[in-house]
Amino acid sequence: MGYLTVEILSIAMFFIGFYGLIISKNIIKSIVAIGLVEMAVVMFLVSIGFSDGMKPPIGPNLENAADPLPQALVITAIVIGITVTAINIIFFISLCRQYNTADWDTVKKKNSE
Image (cartoon, one colour):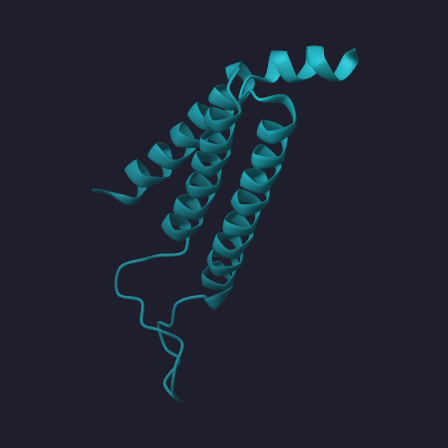
């Protein structure tokens, strides 16, 4: 698979996840859509940070070394994604216990009463 194809696929995944987040009525589907958006960002950063023939930036010979910044951004994005997913699941458990539903509309109706 070419790099351009991976970049296009990651952009498409981002918009699919964003669309799922907008139209989702279920809290669990919203959490999955947020995870899809996060993984699309990670995939995009990996695809723009890689080139053929690049070596890791380790050792005295730094000719043709890969840029370490996208790698650091990917690690940071993964950690943030895991944290956001964990916090979303905690909030979902709390809402589910309080309102006995996984539907956004029901939570809004019960909250406005």
